[in-house]
Every structure is written in C-alpha cells, then in structure tokens.
Length: 224
Image (cartoon, rainbow, N blue to C red; front, side, top):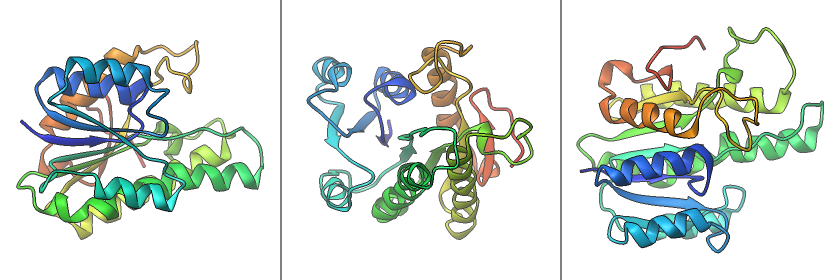
C-alpha cells in the first residue's frame, strides 16, 4: 500500500481520486482550504478513519504551505498528486492571471519543493500534476482562456524539467478529460467517477518510461 498526498481533495476530481485510493487501502492525506466546509471529505474520514488525514492548505498563503508541510507524518511519500486548481475568467485580466498562476503553477511547484525529501525517501516515488489539454500549445485551436491556458502550459514545463532533474521520481502531467465538475460545467461529457478511476489506475501503474510526458485519463499520450 502507498502513502499519498492529494491537494484540492474536497470536491470534483480530487475527491473522486481520494475515494478510489481509499477504497484500495492506500493511506491518503487530503488537503482543502476549508476543512469545516468540506462535508464530503469529513464523511470519508468517518468511513476511513485510519487511512485518511485531512489537512488545511491554501496554495496562495506561505504560512499555510509551511504549516501543511509540518503536518505530514510520513517519513517517505510514494505519490504526490498536485490536483488543486482554478479557472479565473476569459479575458486579458492581469489580476486574474496572477491569481491563476499562484494556484495552478506556483502552488504545485511549492508543494513539490516542500515534499521533495520525503519523495526521495521512497523507493517508488511518483509526482503527478493535474494539467489540461487547454495547456497544450499544439492542441490550441480555439484561443481564449488566457490565464488558465498559460498556467497549465507553464505547469507542463515544470513537470518536464523536474522529471529530468529528478530521474528517480516518476513525474507526469495529466489531463482528466472534460469532466462534470464545477469547473467543467454541466455540458461536460465525462463523469467524475470515470475520470477518477482512469487517473488512479494510470498513476498506480505508471512506469519510468512514462516520466516527463503528458497523458489523458485513459493513458493516451498528448502533445505538449
């Protein structure tokens, strides 16, 4: 069984992956900005009291990041899932772009930095970045969504570079599909469960030759 950390686990894909991993007896630390308002996570805690720990984490707050890193009981971390993310507007708005980069790009970078020693202590460490096809330059045929696209493209580059600098750690960028979440909207075509099951299976089976690459939830490789 693996020791896992997943950010943004209070709803949507993050919550879905948390459910799948707990059902397979893995030990999960799930983060959320507001524990008191994370009812679904609290219900999971009641069901999986031994295997689930809920920790507060705000990716835009340095004190929160420091406090979070001190609450990790694992000596070694097997899987880090940088899932938390936001989508702010669809215009040339610098304030929105700054906030989006703080959460979608710098947040995962800082979390990974805080946990690098624990990852290196594992014999089978893996780091996953929840990206999006909207961050693929080759796939962009519709424009728009500047801040979100840019933040995910930058995240993909961090993933690629990190995989080269830390070859011991399997590192991948993932596209969850167009999922029926608050971000994906009601017109999305994939259920949270379908995406979460596919992503969880891909994460657990990921091998060295997949490191530094970009895949969707079905295991299909995507262009950068």
